[in-house]
Length: 96
Image (cartoon, rainbow, N blue to C red; front, side, top):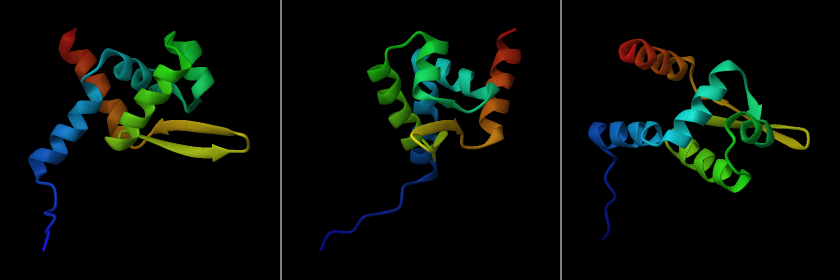
């Protein structure tokens, strides 16, 4: 019999911080701090390629930092929680 244990708090934290661990993902998160965006708008804002943005959005969704919302023909992405933006702002302050 195979048993699957629930992820530990440390595992969940590592997954969360994985989302913050890449400059491209940080650029996407930073862009989403201002307002929800489509993939095309994220591409335009960050200068990343569309496949690259899509790949990173998948990671950010998996990490629980970004959620997608179907809006007609488009999918709009936004931060999953306002505290994600606050965490980014705190990091900016810490680095200043």
